[in-house]
Image 1 (tube, protein in one colour):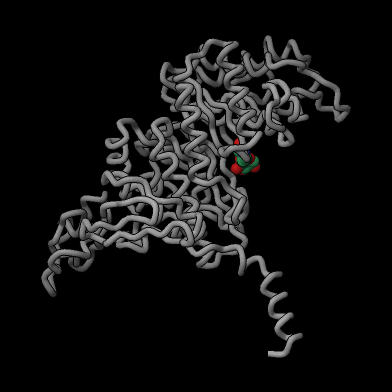
Image 2 (spheres, helix red, strand yellow; image 1 turned 30 degrees about the vertical axis):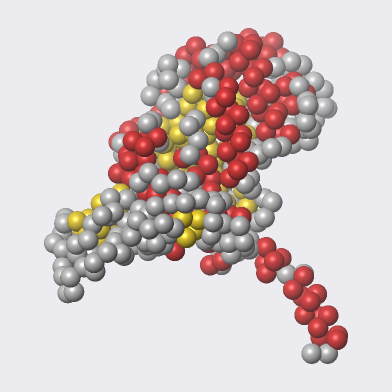
Length: 470
Ligand code: XIL
């Protein structure tokens, strides 16, 4: 190769982020867990709850306007067990004119959840965005804190009743330009938007303390069910960073001011992230943050996860699956995390736009590698296995090394693991030419029978221990 051609090739490689930026990853779906076919994980989620010793809410968004009702109904029957309204419970929808409680859409989502045997979480009670037309308007600081917020919170929280796992009480109130060591008030004032500033663009202060936050939390506590968690929810949080420190500082301040018991308080980590190195939080950093909250007695929740891709290549989709797996593992293996929400159920319904390919299901509603991987992680956890290494770090530092179905001594480079293959690949081979009748068992840990289903049925994973011809 001539010197100039060699320099050109080197430059081209250096200039190509796609080549440099998508790590090769190791996944559970490379080890005997399904990577094709229909996913039915409701019973796996029940097994996850058994291991955790508490319900595990694995959900997505829904609103009463729905472009593909049959698919949506099916996915909330077979895959997700938890629902949050994407927009229907926001302030513009629920109080269109001052004092008017308009909860039809919001309650409609809760009713849809109940009719699919799913649980429901509330999003959100206070946010500077998607406010009704009468807000922010000319509302004074004292009117906001003394009347507007208490009335709104009371109307919405009592309207939805006690059957709500958690409420996002305040959404996105911490600034993006914060630095370590800021006080709770400085963190919120850094947001530089209503209601710490007036909304007329003059950058005048409106609320000059945290009384609007206290008003939202104390009224949510007053009217919510006795086990409903009350959360501060924000984006670009979860790791060892100034914004996350701010969110915790605000929560501590709220607790001290309102006296709400720690076990009712929570932090929602929105987690709108991108599949590129440095654009998401590592599993170990998430674990540390969750543990810090556990020390306080508070709950951690992943509330709006989506993982944007630069393009939907196979390598990127595998990387997306590894990141999703790490976030899920961080929650599964934390004592204080039991809500995990995937924002928008499929790519063509995503607020990021179809081309971001940021969800678990493609635009035809088919599961992507990330959907199979999260199903595998749930089954792996339900079967009692130890935590895997951080797959999103790439195979350079984390390789899953398990022997499908044999209960072997493998694991990953950083954790030993036994094997919860959903269909047997070890032991004695199933009889040749066999056929299992519809509704018969066709797989699961310890199962060594026939894995071929009679025509007209396919082998579907119920949980790590039981697959059935359906
Ligand atoms: C988004 C919805 O997905 C969109 O449909 C809507 O147009 C704008 O809001 N953080 C939040 C969510 O707390 O409420 C936002 O949802 C996404 C960012």
